[in-house]
Amino acid sequence: MFIHKAIAALALGALMSAAAYAAPVLRAEVNVASQVVTVGDMFDDAGILAEAPLFRAPRPGTAGMVPLDAIKAAAARIGLESFDTAGVVNVRVMRKASVVDEQKLTQLIAANLKAKGILTTGMTAQTIFSQPITPINAEVVGTPVTLVNLRYLPENGAFTAQFLISGIAVPLNVTGTIDLMIPAPHLAANLAAGTILSKQDIIMRPVPLKYAESTGFASLDQLVGKQLQRQSREGMLLKPADVAIAQLIARNQFVTIYFRKGPMTLTVKGQALGSAAPGEPVQVLNLMSNRVVSATATAPGAVEIASAPTNLAQL
Image (cartoon, rainbow, N blue to C red; front, side, top):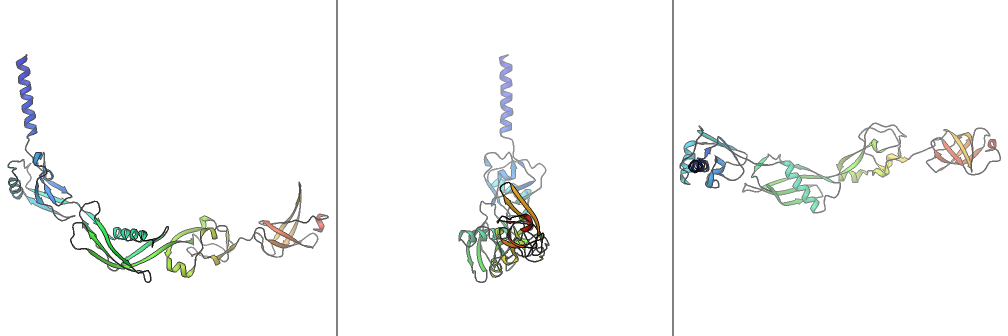
């Protein structure tokens, strides 16, 4: 029994040793992020030589074919004499890349303007490059592109900027213009004169800061609950002059005149002789007595008087 156990242990040890020293197996395709291709990149079961470099990697974002003879020669130079080719005669090596495009450059410019206090809360920067930026393949690193210098002229919006891109020795210099944009209220639909504006009637859209400052625009609290002065089209930029305090009572409108005292409420029909916003005074013709009374606008089509009448008909 002891002899059988010993033989089994020796056999298991031999199998484990064979597994531990299995020959590296060549891969048909390799994807790397660094500047070099290592044994661990090129082979499965690379063992202690996994970190040893074999070749320079292609440029970021590109691929190349490496013939088997070149792989054997490079492996022999570092002491890897034997490996399993797995039937592979050419290995495709691709290098990963971080793509640097106009969007990334624009984001860095905006961040720089925010840090300088030029771009404040709610504002955005619309960046237009003098020449289109062709996407650039940079090395895969934590920060593939860095803005090292930005010169911005607020007077005309012109800018020049310089960027450093990982894996590329020559800095990238760009020029263009920057429009500082702010959100401004626009009508969401065509609306008739006299419409009382709600939040749903207004959509915020970015406009150039200079244009907004020259034409003027209203804030939301200056618009919601206010009345349009004239018929207006969808997309119109809203300015303070476009609205007025909502009128509860219109001139010549038929209204109900209220008098309240304690639990008693008296009403009579009347006709407004002027227009009035909430809480504003308005002269009203009592249609029963043909007398003009002073009242206050309280609700659409309703006014209230404060003086007590001797009888309802004499209001």
